View 1 (cartoon, rainbow over the protein chains, first blue to last red):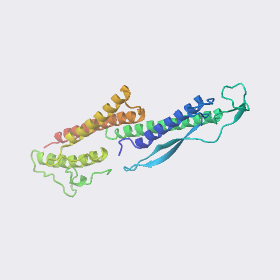
View 2 (view 1 turned 90 degrees about the vertical axis):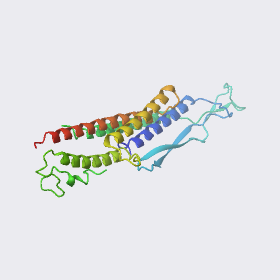
View 3 (view 1 turned 135 degrees about the horizontal axis):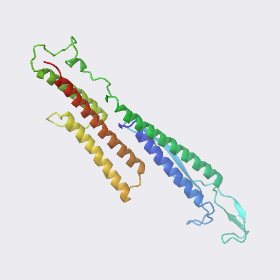
View 4 (view 1 turned 135 degrees about the vertical axis):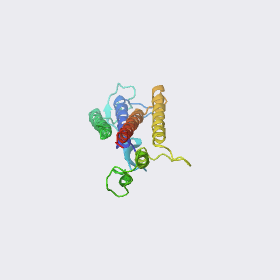
Length: 134
Length: 131
């Protein structure tokens, strides 16, 4: 058991939000990538979280995977594009930058909330040491 | 974690309580001090062991309060130091676990200092008793 209460859960949550932000960064960076290493347009990636049940009684969060979202992206008519097919249509990635920005704000707020928990827990533990002090 | 040690009743500072071991005719008070120290050590060691996650007791000799605490605090300090070095040299990128380990090592050390202060205070209080 930790000296500082709940620290294990909070640390795992901070790590999970960090992975989520990395995924969002990857999505936004590739929002206009029409050709990936497999020859297909970029498909946006989604993280999935699951809870862990630690033996010592503390829960936590773990990232169960970074999966690809396989819904096809929009096709745009752009005959001058080097990756245009015979009809002049280019398949774009299925990344909606506005949605990714909102996800980024959510991840950032969740991260700040967990940081606040960590700070409060540490303060509580340190205050407990004042009990014996005159 | 027990809030109050269960063998508090054995402490000799409660007049008329059960298991009172203070004898008015005890000239030096040494036996009272020994009994108190034994009870205090056991209760604090148990509580400290619970707080620190119950390190394995040494076979054969009973570890004193100071040795048990210091070993546990030292172990935490070493773990924190290793994680910090890994993070700084780039072998690990887990900044959160490193910070948690550093905080816990600092807190464990503060706890040890508080326990030591309390013990010293108790000893001085005992020594101040009139014979």
